[in-house]
Image (tube, rainbow, N blue to C red; front, side, top):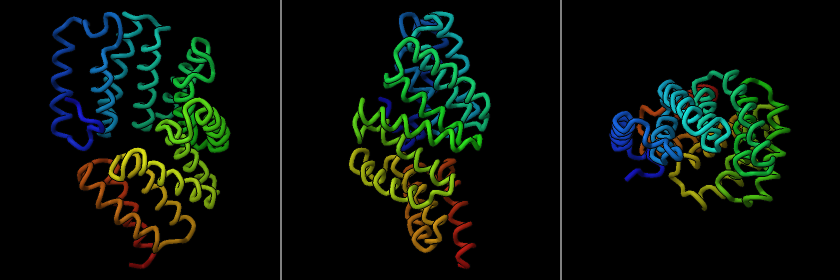
Length: 262
């Protein structure tokens, strides 16, 4: 019943999260007896997709503790819950906590799975995004370039995880002032995401938003405004006017229009 991505059905997603919470609380952790039941992942990821960062931190903190108690600290699904906790810290702006958890999870994943395992590559990607949020841009770029090479070899050039890494690498280039490289990479990522995920997928919308910001940084203001106007319209239609991504795009568009004198 859970739509993917569920941000396109916010009312249904909220109801499913409530139902999952009641089910979990009334079954005495039965959903964690042999593994973390997929519905628990869906509920927690739904909070992240909806931009409910504080609620996501509380959710993943609790689930991570339960998974360690019931399944063990080295269980692969425990590592996944800890990785998701770090992502919720990142989304909440608690960057130092996100970095600490990501680094610990990565050490355990590389020990248990090896450095080229897809889960370890994903964690390394997430760690890099925490680095650039903390202003450690050169470290983020170095790490993301390594991750991209590994994911292209292990998963393929247009795998969704690889596309996420390429998108994040472009943002790091943008943050480092390497605008032309950011634009070139984002344009290819956008083409691939539209083909693989569809034009209205939230990840595709994120890439279009990032590309508009890169155009703006390059002084291509009219192109940036035109692209972001279209992105904002799609965000309002797909995610709703109050979603955090929509609000950010609206603020960015206002800043662009001011800089263009319109």
